[in-house]
Length: 325
Image 1 (cartoon, rainbow, N blue to C red):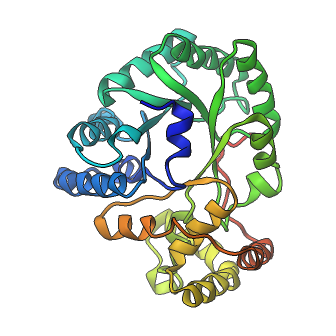
Image 2: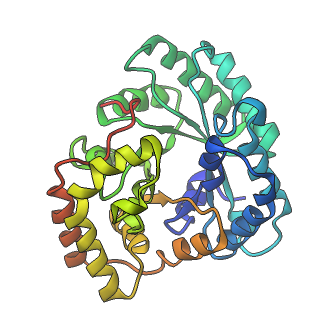
């Protein structure tokens, strides 16, 4: 099997993680076969990076997300099978206080998934309990040194914190393969304000963009208030979408010109920025739409036009509370 970095770079600029987050809002076992079809379709089309977390599907579901992903991997037979990269994020739970607890978490994930190609620190505790973070990072390094995982990564780290952590791992001669941040046309903060892309490039770290469609807002299906979801998500959409309409209009115009969907253009914009976007795909139609966002690229003028529209947003997507500087 190729190295973890080779697997990530061969992911063709697009990943999938849909079942991980779906399990947070209610698990329907009848969807398992449908999700297997989504997995099969993605891999056969060169989408080989799959990301989940040990906190997805918690409680009575007992990390069901990781178990499903492992099952999908075992049952897949076809093209690009040897290119599949199984990634998971290990949560910095308050009760995980030692390096050993992180090693145990990685072992548990590997048992559920069959293997872990990429283990990532799900979030930094630097904003509220930095002592815990250094212990957990030691455990993440131990997972790599002991051969339990093939590569390690981080999530929700900013430039200043990333540089400190990178030095810590460099002292042990351990490479950081990836960093995940919330990044989309409605959430450019990690790149435009923190300069995280330039830092990742300097350090040889691949940047992964999660939530590239910003909860579906950039697909255009929530353009009108009558389509807003209920609850807290609906309240968030009421705050974001009215101010974002010029951006959505720009996205729609470019999509129509290119004969693409708004979602495809939004995902491709992330690819054009040198990141690996990981959009969700709950069904075959969504998977097909996501897959069609690769193998082409927006031109410089189209990227610039979208950049200008995004820069004029006064109310961007709220940042993850664990995102560090």
